[in-house]
Length: 179
Image (cartoon, rainbow, N blue to C red; front, side, top):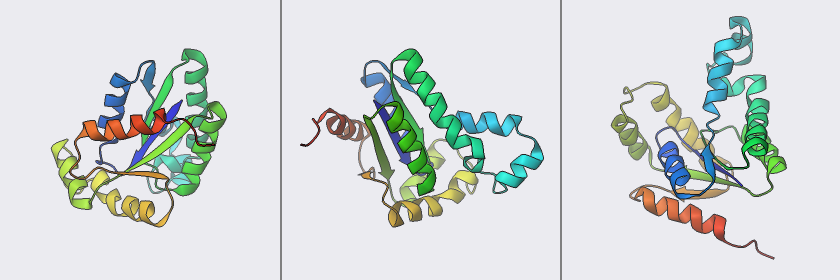
């Protein structure tokens, strides 16, 4: 099984993913940001400028492909459930990665965490982000994308304890498929 946990920066993806790893046996965390950081380190500046002049490593041609390939190798090598926190607001990128994950394991679920902008900003401050940094700057475009496009199973996180969000996800993945 692969669990994709999507949402704006600061909405609680990583906290949720870490909690799920602790509660779901035989699971591991795979953060595609690490693939992006790797590419950012090795790609020449002219390639980075040409492919991702916005500074967003998700625009690198190899990021989507490597994200799927790393997931495939993790699953085949370690036979573990992957929990994948990520902020993907580009629906085409999400569709590419989700369909790639479904080829790795057809039991792939995508959850998009939502919260009000004020809640997101409060959570970013609580984790020590500097006011106005890149994470803060992405909030509007993330919220707009999640509202305008269909990102599937949405979970509102405003005024909800993390334990309740964990239970919602566990209930969803434990339900037998509909006929």
